[in-house]
Image (cartoon, rainbow, N blue to C red; front, top):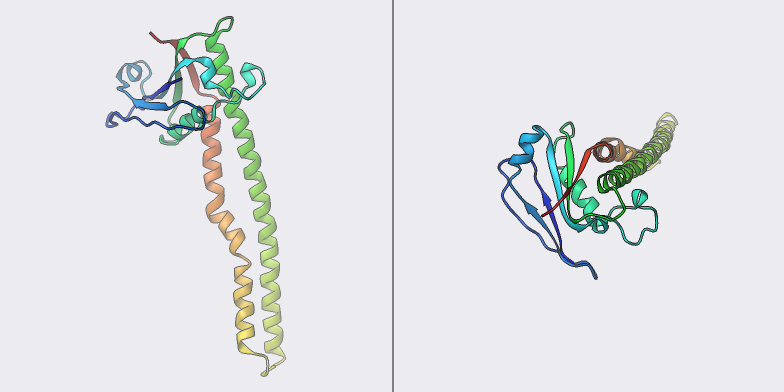
Length: 219
């Protein structure tokens, strides 16, 4: 089955593109960029992410036995939405428009998709927040260990100097100094480089968990 997904960012300079990929038994899926003018006129300043699907089942992970509103989204669909949301500035609002060729019977498609999308990205945002807290805890612990080890290295060096142990190898003192600063590598890596990508991703996930979602009948 072929799933046609369309994203319409509000940047006028984007050209039409398409990509196809085969994943196991899944059929190829294509992404198409189209002119967003009509939507942009209706909701100025909002970036529109559009999915064109045959039916609502293609939006969900078919292996998840949970009720519809608690189901995980299909991995490709979720990453597609997230990757495009990351292209825009974080303060800029986005919305999701899902075009369905076939509406689900016995279900309110609008409510079904909206609840499922919000639930999924809220869950991802909570997991991301837990990961951020774990990283910060690891950073504090590694910083404490690093500082204690660095202080111990300097203490040993000062002790050797105060005892005027000329027979103490100079390379050993230099080695202790280097080892002490190497112990600070991990906390510095966390506090300089690792925390902010997680924080940024969490902010985007939180925005997606509250974005406007609209379902339209295609055709």
